[in-house]
Length: 493
View 1 (cartoon, rainbow, N blue to C red):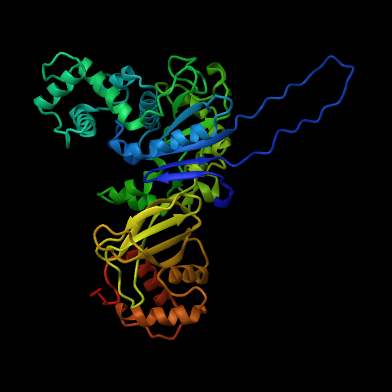
View 2 (spheres, helix red, strand yellow):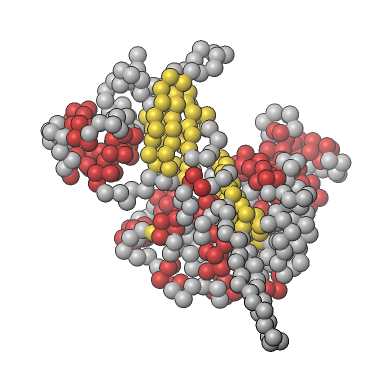
């Protein structure tokens, strides 16, 4: 996996990542003259130039309906396409839908395929595909009235008429009149298709209206989308639970935590290839979205069942590279920055007096991402979603300015973003640093200071002796993962 510094271009917004793939060495072939009539052929490897990942949260639960939350990230896909334009030709796309390892292979293959279909249809403005998902969904998907209300609210809200009034008859009639349709207040097929088109335009913006026969890898050479969009089901998760975790989640009556931990697995990945690169649908290994998983399994690694199984330890693809069952998909994405594991983190911002800084304006800079403007909450905690790890993040913050004035960032801090698979001392050093203890201090001095600040929370209280024993380490992890209350008891004035 390449270091974050090796990625030339990467952009991210909440739940969406767009990035260049690292450069690949050119193909080298050794040739020599011969008098024989035999010949060999060289086949160029299919190498993505970039990637665009959409997470599960932009879809309705257990559905392929695309929510308005996708809008903010689509500009990054437009930027990525334009960045890799060559001589007026744009990079062709192929879309891969993924599910989580819960449920049956057949169902997850269909759900991930429907989501890939929905994104493809949105990009090419194929309202008939969305109408099929709405009226004749394969695999049990139901968009229903909720999707119509969401689209109508978004479209009418964007037209300047204020917050969308949803499915009221007046709202439907106003939309029908605007589009030159029969004004009857009924959301029938013609009204739905006009609404799909308006909603697609809103989500994608003017820079993302693609052509089926020009902008996709198989050029619409197959009516079922083979080569252009496909569902990979649950076969390529980025996270696989340990045996203990899976057993605990299975026993729990409330599956909220399990579903949240599985969220990174439920994603749609768009890969961008070199302009003018094309594939023949007949030789493309992935089955169509409406076909079963048998075609996927033909491309599995020999140890695919072991890769898919719950083992002694939790595994994540960017660290172990052994969670994908499909060797074809891993060949395409093994070094993809969009298949890195993303995390969310929270940091509490303090002033020089050790008081948390409520509603502090701040700026976060992670790796190659553009600076992110944020504001702390009423307890001084700022949260960044979906950032790449391992990494370092620079945080700059100040005090809430008077109305109409720009904030001044008077404090700064470099924060470590890592996996929790470090040795004890390294983990303690980074967590203490992130909590505000100076990185240049000796570890014993920072442990002592931490024991003095937080030791009263333990029972019995910690002794401030600078020893990183089990009780001190347990409290450090608890304080670090919590950060929800004013643990120092120093509320701001």
